[in-house]
Image 1: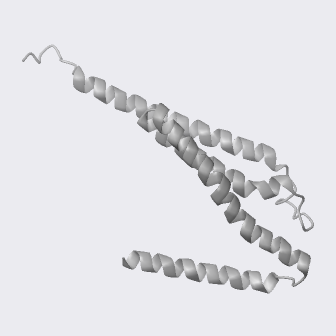
Image 2 (image 1 turned 60 degrees about the vertical axis):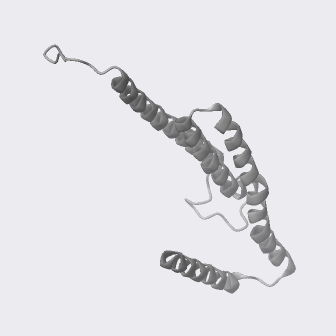
Image 3 (image 1 turned 135 degrees about the vertical axis):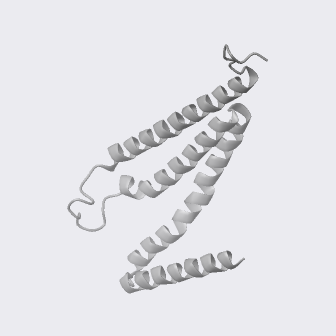
Length: 153
């Protein structure tokens, strides 16, 4: 219980600090306030109405078709991919609102996003394949232990 209270206090403090920083930067003009409201409302709504149901549906379908280690890896990959796509959509779909910051905004984000997703899935599948192979080898060894020549029982 004390850990939860501590985490809640840290979260509330962080949220308050972020709100204070945001308040100092708000330009109180209708178009800016409308844009800010869109960011603060559309993000959570998109997460709750798109990412969560798609991930839950995918996980439910995979739970019926994939064996356990693969199921966990694929569900983790779906969650990470969904969150990454949701976070990356603003950079992929709209021009920057301010002049580009050299080295930060002056790149094409599509190749980076696709490369990250490729590496994520390759690592997830490689680690799961290695884990599945190691577990399978242990199970086979338990069923058919290797008996050496001097070990006759």
